[in-house]
Each structure stands twice: as structure tokens, then as C-alpha cells.
Length: 431
Ligand code: AMP
Image (tube, rainbow, N blue to C red; front, side, top):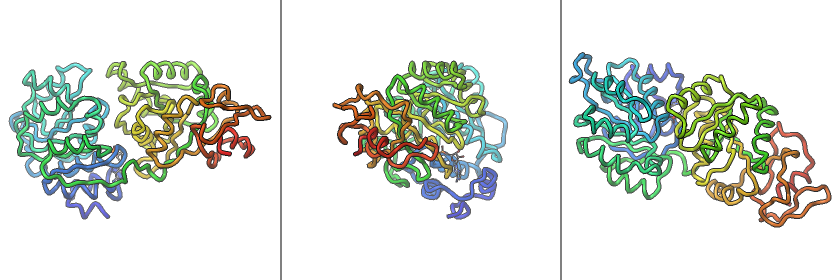
């Protein structure tokens, strides 16, 4: 499939060529023609599948013929509203709108909480056709009458599953109440849960359904591996892996904000340049941390799930689960940050014996076990294994297959030091 067959004009085809996109991603091939047709669309697509361009390109196409070059704000009413759950995602989408819309006269802006509202008010006052917003801040603007949504033609609900999780649905209802009911609505979600389907029933009219990747599928070019290790030794194992494999850009996930802060300062103290993003940091700190990571001024970015949602960092080679997430679905979101758009990537999980249940949950969702690799000096203390474990003659854990969170070791990555088969098996509990 080529971009030429999707119904985009020469301007936009030149834009995608300039971006280096040679062919549309599956979600783009499937969704763009429907959106150009004016249909409502319910699309299951995770971040990393090219979903932003899948809605931004056809929206720009639809609006380009009626773009007004006049100066007056009245000539630039909000015609497209894109709602996203997090500030980072809002900024990212706004950048994509600017990039893809470079050659059009359409104005765009982004509004999100945690920053001063005055500069946003000035921007809105000048008039913008495409507005990207987080729900809470948009409601502030609605309350202050600094935005008028009565001429919105297209509403996009991006990462709708996350907006649901984060409790934004009542806000979205209020916002939708300000928008004409005769409009085009596009809903993007990583998964189609029952809740998402009922949300679609509420906001969409006779939608086309686009479901490109199989549910919970992982990109083929992504290598997953887990390392068994006690919780207290994870930071040192992480440093060991970063040095051993000469990792230059690593996104590390922790479960808690405090855990993220602690790990970031530990790594920094140990000479591994690190920044952190989580909900307790100011917007300015988060932006600075992200820029430092994107620009490769720091090697490691430690993030919590909410803060990292939707982050798009080009060619990110490594994602590390410092702790497995409580929700198996978050494992998929996390590792979706690497192996994007055809690039290869590695997702590493540091798994302590206490994380048996979480690992089982993830493996159930993946419908396969994650290959296990060993760094001998970091093997968990067998006395702290979750189920009864005895010591082998060599002093390593011997447990029954079902006792262990990790199953077969699989092949160790080439970079893993060579270990005897029996050692691997014993530690992985697969024999
Ligand atoms: P998204 O899923 O929208 O976050 O996009 C993920 C990444 O894919 C972004 O860095 C885009 O620049 C890139 N991308 C989007 N469309 C294509 C395409 N057709 N070919 C190659 N890369 C793409």
C-alpha cells in the first residue's frame, strides 16, 4: 500500500515524504480513507503504530480547503478538538499537528494543566482551528469563557482507555456538551474493552471499526527478556546491564513516584546520568527531563506509568521494567515505547521472587512466557524465593517448575556471559 492511494493531496504527500515515511502503517491505511469520508471511527491502536498521523493527516486534508488566511480571530474558530489524557501526549500531538500542517494556514494550539493559563488565553484569543487539550485545563478555559467550542466539526478522543482509567469521562461529557452533536468523532484506544465500547456508543455515531493489530500483540522486532533478581539488588543489576551492554538510551519504569525519584538519584550518584518524570514533578521539570533524555544528554529516564503514557521517543532501543506493573496491560503499554515503526528494541524486566503474580498475569496476557536470562552474581537469594526452595550442591535454587515466576530460560542474549546449561536451568526452575 502506498500513501498515494489514500486520497491525500499533493501537499500532504510531500509532507509525509519529507518525514521519511515510505508507506502508511496499517492503522493509517485503514483509518485515513474513512476519516476523509467524514465517518466516525473507533480505532484500536497503541502508541507507536503511527496513530497520530492516522488522524492528523486526514483532518488537515479535510480542513485545508476551508482554511482562512484572514487575521481576525473570528475567522479562526476551533474546528478540531483533540483530547488526550496527559500533558506529554498533548505536547507530542501538538508537535505532530505543527509538523504535518506546516504548509497549511490552519492555526493550532495546545492547552494543559500544571502551567500558567495566561499565555494559553492569549493564544486562544488570537484564534486557533486545531486545539489539543487535556480535559481538566480545557474545562478551566470553558469556565472562564476563554474558548468557544460551538463550531467544532471534529472531536478526537485519543488514548480513550487511559482517559477512562484516569477518571476523565465526566469531564469529557461536559466538554462534549459544548460541541455541536453534528460532528465527526474519532476514538483511539489501545484496547477495546467493554467500557470503551460503551463509551463509543455514547460519543460516536455508526462508527467504522479499525482494529489493525491483534489484541495485545507485540511488535515482532521487539526482544523481551527477564532477569531474576532480588528487589534490593535491582539498581545494581541495572547499572551492570547498562555497562555490560553499553546502553546509551534507556527508559526505566517504576511503580511509584517515590521509587522513580530514589532510583534516579541512586543511578546519578553511581555515575549513570539519569532524569525522572512522574506526577510530583512540575511541568517544567518534566519537560526538561524529557528533553534531556531525547537529546541524549542523560542516558536513563526513570518514569512512572502515568507520566510516560504516550511518550514518543524516536528509536528508543531499551525499555526496562524495574518493577512489573500491577496491571498486566501496562506491560504492553510500557514496552510499546521501543521497537517502534520497524526499529528493533529490547524490553528487559527485572523480576524479584515477590513478583510471581504480576509475571504470571503478564505472561497470561501475552499467552507466552518471557525468556529468562541470568547474571549469576545477581541471582535471587534462594532463601527468599516465594515457594519452598532448596539449595543445590552448587548453592543455587532448586524448585519445582510451578514454584517459579520464570519458566524456561530460553536462549540467553548474545551479550549474556556464558553459563553452564545446568546453572541456567536450575535458576530458571525449568528442569
Ligand atoms: P504514534 O503511534 O503516532 O505515536 O507514532 C509513532 C512514530 O511513528 C512517530 O515517531 C511517527 O513519526 C512515526 N510514524 C508515523 N507514521 C509513520 C509511517 N508511515 N512510516 C514510518 N514512521 C511513521
